[in-house]
Amino acid sequence: MFKITVPSIQGSQALVMKYNVLAIVIVTFVGGIFPWLVLNIAYYSVRKLINKQALNTFTLILNNYIVRNNLEAATWDSIEGMPSQMKSLISRIQAEVNGGESFDQTVLRTANILKIQAFRDFYNTVYSSVISGGNTDENLHRLIGKIRSKKTRAQTIKEDLSPLISKAIVFTIVMVVVYFAVGLFWPDSIMLVKQSSIGVYYTDSIIIAILIEVGLLLKYLSMED
Image (cartoon, rainbow, N blue to C red; front, side, top):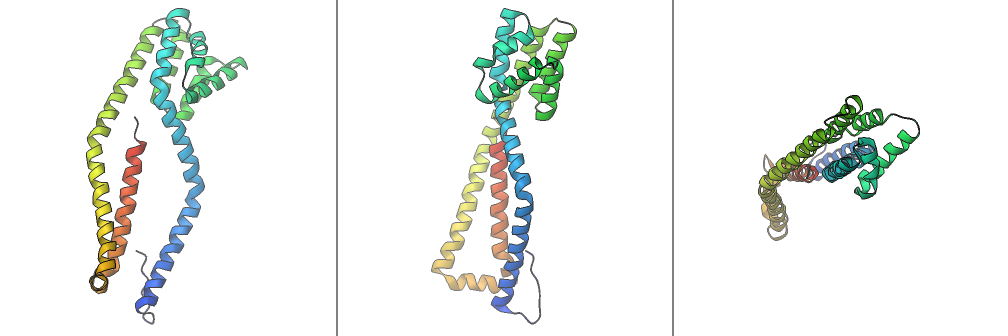
């Protein structure tokens, strides 16, 4: 990775230069991407929480709609029973509506910001209720069924991937432990490997494998529940 060949620099000096260049590239990359990464982690964490709470929230709204027969009123009545993240979101929507915004347009704007399909479907239900005033309970039932089906599929996929992820983690741990164990107890063997034609890439390949494994693990953990 990022090896520089300088004829006058040999052995340990070349190795130090190689990893100095690598460190500079990594620090520059991390420093530039860190603010963007923090914002995206916060954004997707909120999205994941809201998406996870959608099923209970819309089920609560449906139950209140059956009593009130008015979707907007049913939504406000449901706020107190909503999970915390969704409660905060719907409360902000209520504040905007109380400030003069229309219910359907506020929900649409929120759906576009969040980019969560469940919330876009909720907007379609709200819009249908505003325009026609009918079939709202049927639309809510369809919305809840769609969310439940998606959650079931996601859980099935995660269950299928779980053994593969576990094996990959074990393989990576074994690879790292073997590397350090051989280096500790048989240092001559490691030196022979490093001095071979592929030796300069040996440590790099372990680092890359670990980074890939961490990336896959984070992707697995970020999958919808």
